[in-house]
Length: 322
Image (cartoon, rainbow, N blue to C red; front, side, top):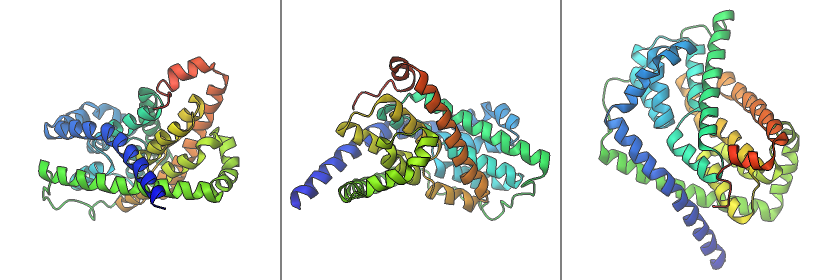
């Protein structure tokens, strides 16, 4: 029992250090950019794009903050700007969906790259899908009146306090986040090992086979993909890094799993967070999952006809075992 515990702790520590090496430098760079006002500047430069989607300039600030800082950074921006925004439920839901598709890009996409997929291709996939989906939701609302009623943002509007945003608060929050991540990694590895030893993993995989056939995902990456879909890309991508050490996952299933995770992950926490902001569940969950399914299925068909060399070169250039 002691040997098993020490083995799992060593695996958890190794995976945790892998993630910290990727996350911490990026988080520092983003914090510096935030302090220098570069994130707000980036949002202003993207104003024509957000207006083309059908959203106000404030939505651009929220989205860019989310894309660079993370979901909670974006929510903080939304709370701070809520008193100045006048949007419909459809517009709010479109913005929430865009936030869900593209958030924490510097950190999460660094993890995706480490796990084996193309950094730029998956980043463009997330941004492009978010913009296209957001535009479609607003366009349908404008044409049909669906979710056209004004969104009530008064309940989340900031009272004007700045809160703790300095370096000391950031450092303490980062330490707490890393401690939580280590604990979750340890629990996930224990859970996956238990599921594998008990045969439950195989049964879950068989249950997922119809969905896997539709989306093109390989059964080899189904368990860790499911974890990432439910809990987050950081954990799903981290587990793919871990699994790649144990078995050499080919470039095709690795890219498809990471493409799925890039588009739809953290379905529990992130979805509840956006629901609390007032977004529509059908838009931010059902529609997002269906669109992810269609996109991954299309990517699977494309990759099936490409030679192995081109798949590795274009889609999974970092797919050698870490």
